[in-house]
Image 1 (spheres, rainbow, N blue to C red):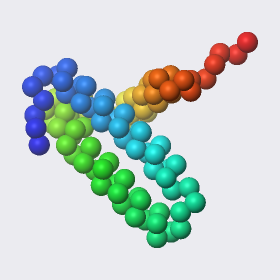
Image 2 (cartoon, one colour):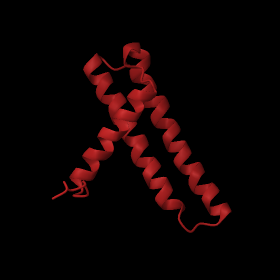
Image 3 (cartoon, helix red, strand yellow):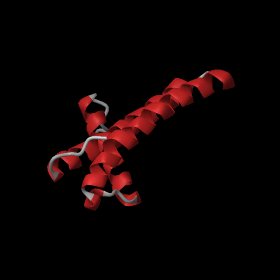
Image 4 (cartoon, rainbow, N blue to C red):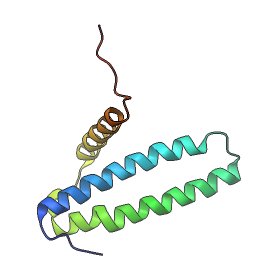
Length: 99
């Protein structure tokens, strides 16, 4: 496992890891649509492996180097909300304000 050289790098790693987890979770739910149980198990296993690597190699590396970056539940929730909003805006899917 690599060690981030400074807290800015570690914070970017942690946040990107959280963003990647949110994207994979969204993708997993979309990928499971219409699959039989055996196919669903294979797809879940593949996504689980990818998510495990992100947690171990990216998020945990950042937090081990800089424990003050340890996300609690509210941090995870807010980070995921922000990342989903930014991704939606980038894709032109952001909710439009009411008239």
